[in-house]
View 1 (cartoon, rainbow, N blue to C red):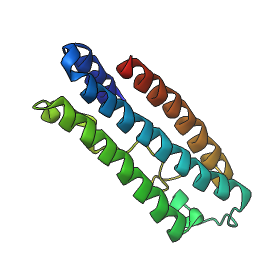
View 2 (cartoon, rainbow, N blue to C red):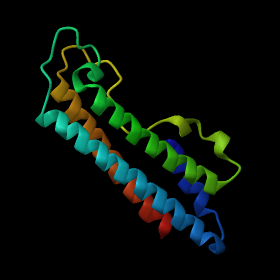
View 3 (cartoon, one colour):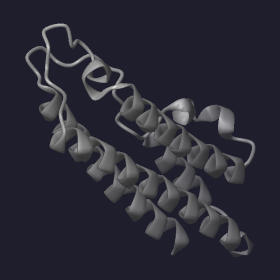
Length: 145
């Protein structure tokens, strides 16, 4: 999120004639927030319809299943596209944003923490993304103001 904060700070230095660019950035931020909301529905489905946990389920992906894992990954790519668009609008400084490739979505690829259930991982993912949504929506309001 630091990369997005930096982009917003950059946009605050722009003259008034770049208001349209700031509005475009706000739209991208809101699109990313919408993608996170979509990812939350996937994680909530995991909470509501968990697969049985087995002793070999080291990653959430093995317990979430391929279809839901792929869906989370695809949504994550959407957030990366939104970020890329923001940095394209900023212009000429994209290479300075190290988090450009980082998805805002909690995906199913990392290993579960020792003793962590898939429901606990899903709840953690939802909580983290809800916080990010708040930040993104706040940034969108800030940049459009």
